[in-house]
Length: 329
Image 1 (cartoon, helix red, strand yellow):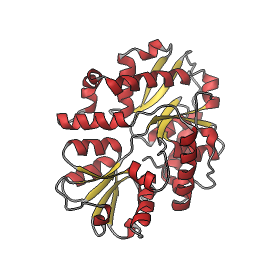
Image 2 (cartoon, rainbow, N blue to C red):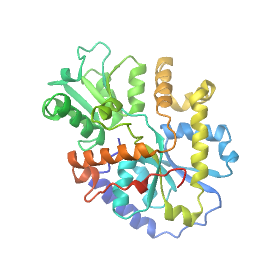
Image 3 (tube, rainbow, N blue to C red):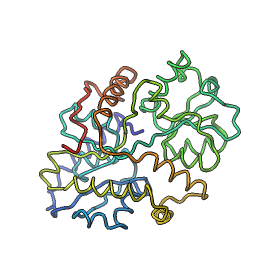
Image 4 (spheres, one colour):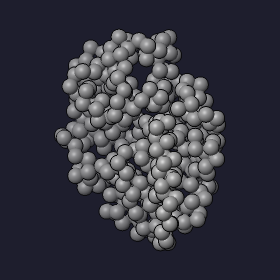
């Protein structure tokens, strides 16, 4: 659920101008610089790669570029401070439409969810009419746009116009929800997992929303993104990173001991919360991108363009299947 506002684009332009004034540093061979938010799900993967020595196995050096927020990762990529980031393909599609040669390889199919308190009288989506809903992100966040499309389809009316909607950062929305000041919240999967682990109830998953909109199979939205020209120039072995990431996912998909090692990073409040995070993560482990995923992504792009605005999808954004990386390249 990553959205880049006009303000972020202005910040990006400033960042690029500043970055251009510094000489490029010599790059060591076989190094990949991967951006990561401290404590985020990518950091769990990085910890597993390093603990299992998967970087050594695949013959490359993994350097971590820590960023403060998810929205800072695209800035790092565009400024040349990172070789690879983890972000949404919808953002990458916008940039590709502007002429950037970005590629996307799926990382996770885990999606957010619409959560309600455990004992809430809300039993169905229709029950949210007239209620207060918190949304992690902004009014042009793609999950919110898709939920509105779902609302129009199943209720015949826009939930945005039939409920009190509060937008905000995921941690703030989570705290408002826990305090009882919200009847429901649409949140990122990591926050939804923690809420589920503390007793909250999932009313509707974004996977269900996407399927109800006849987009099937639901394409993985989050993945590794890089510039083909930039990595060709630097020699960053992205293919080796992808292989190590796949091995790390295989470890996290089967080994409970690997999750025990991650406890200091996850900082789960209870064993139940830890179990929920692990289950959500494992449910999102995905394989290589497929032709079926490309077709579904094309349909989703068309829907987002129809329902969103230029701030969501970008002015002139066109669907380009060449964005998606497959084993054949």
